Length: 317
Image (cartoon, rainbow, N blue to C red; front, top):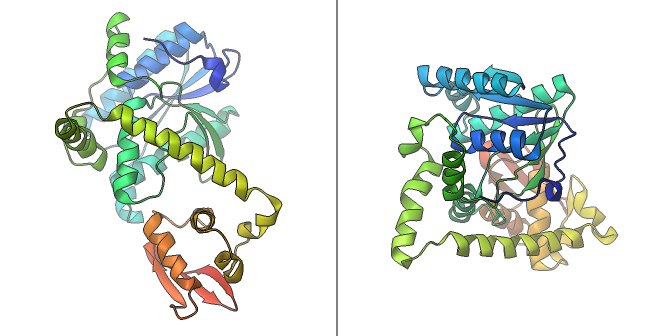
C-alpha cells in the first residue's frame, strides 16, 4: 500500500504531533506508518474513551496505552460521558462525540504546546461523509480535507489526514502485511448511527443498483465541488466583498450579488456566527428575508433566528 508523501501534507519527522488513536484498524495503521515509515519520534498518542461501550471502551484505552509505550511515545487519555453530553446539549451522539474529541485535542494541545493533530480518516470515510452531507442538504459536497483548521472551545488545531487517499482494502493489506493487532469496535456492525447505516446499508445498496463501486464517482464529483468551492471563496476574499464579513449583512448588497455568491455569503455568515447544522435549507430561509414582501423574521435550529430591520439582516436569539 502506498501512502501519500508526508512532505506533500507538510508532515515532518522532526516535528511534534498529536495522533488520534482509537485502537481500531485505521488508527493503528496510521500510528505504525508514522513510526516506521515517516520516522516520527516525537508523537503524543491521544485516546478518548467515549464511555459508550462499557468494559470494551476501557479495554480499548489499555490496548492503545500499551501500543504507545511499546513505540516509546507519550500517552494521553481522557474519559467523557458522550451520552450525557448528547442529552444535555440536545445534539446527536455523533455530534457530541465529535465535539468531545476536538475539545480533548484542544486540551492536550495546550499541555504539549502542539497544535498539529494527525487523524486516520481514509477514502471510504470520505465517501460516507460526502453522501451524508448530500442527503442531509448541508451544502458541503467537498467532503473531508487532507489539511484543515478546526476551532475547539479553547484552541485552533491544524488537522492532517494522510490516509485520505487510501482505501479500506489498502488498510486491510497494510495491517496484514505488518502483522498489526487492533481492536474491533463492535458498534461498527450495528446500524444505530447514521454513519454506520450509510456504510452498511446505503453504499452497498447503491453499488448493487448501479452494478459497480460508486466510490470513485462520488470522490470525483466531490473533487470538482471542492475546486468550485475554493474558487468561490477566493472571489469572496476580494476587497469589494469585505462587507460580507460584517456581523450584520446589507440587504441591498445581497440582492445585487450573483446568486451563487449570495448563497455562499449567507452560508459562511451563518457558520461564522456558530449557527449549528446549517445547509441549503437554512440558506434558502435567510434568502426569503431579501424579498420586500417577504417575512422579517425566520427561525433557525436550536432557538436561533434571523431578523430583517433597517435594511440589515442579523442573528438573534
